[in-house]
Length: 427
Image (cartoon, rainbow, N blue to C red; front, side, top):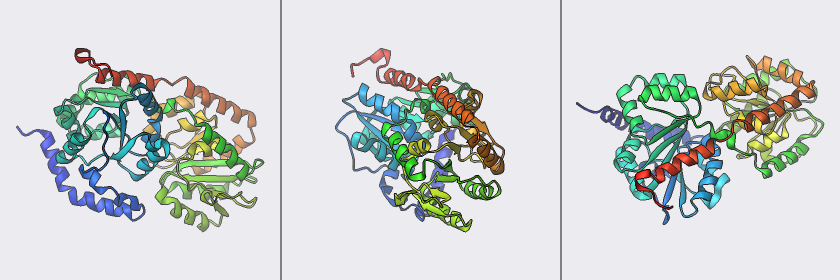
């Protein structure tokens, strides 16, 4: 009987022309997609003369979430080289900004058998760590065949994704069984993964809770607030997605707030110019963060067209809205805003961060709104209730502090993979 992975691989080969067209299409707005194309097929120039510990962090969110884990790995295994693999140019850029030359970084190859085998032969990692929802069947099988420990940590799986995987039960079960360990963020994630794989899945918590706001970003936030104007109310729309900016800008005109400065930071940098044009179409006076100038009293909107400064934006605002939640994108990470002690507003669509969102609501650190008009109305109320804002900020810090610990659990899992009981070695 033919194995399901054979049909999966055949499908990938049929999609190869689309893969190349996809790179060209994405490169229209982000030329970086045409860089390092060889890496996406397993051809690399960078190498390490040290034993390699490999983490796959797809894009910006995963790369930032891994910061504490990367630091702990560097401390625990100083004689090893950390290899970060990415899928998107923005993830790679975030890695450069966060870690510099402390790690090496490449693109993870597409899931073609020849490409993943070349990747493994080139770097020969001692252990591999996939973060969140990265289930690539040929990569998993190649690691299993090479007897290389591969862990899926900080794993999350929405109901929507679980239903999609459930259409291919033999393929997903075989893939999950070839992983050395799966550890989930929440009980719900663990239950869905265990059901798909018919396997035990422990709960490790969420690495994002372990991120500590960098001191230099908090200092930059203080400087930004001076540029924005200490006496003005500042509303941050963080990590907004396509279609949400228009809703927010329309609502701003329906719910005017005296002297309000709105800071919009799009999730994807390739949309900076698009959002700038949208702001101008709404007739609002705008300045760009990239201009590095004091914000004029008459400016209504600042476009946050910079990378790696999200903690600074949170530190500089009074209230933060977390994008991707007004429309059905599943929401973005609200933990960073809470860690800085800022009141958080979210829309109705938060399935990508369901448990973290429900916890934040339960702690009183966040409020949910149904649409953009309700968002601006709630913002107006909060800006007139300084005590409520202060309490929400305090509750946010408590929410983050009381849910830390995932990094230490991840370190224990990684140590177990590197030092199995039957073949312990002193690393």
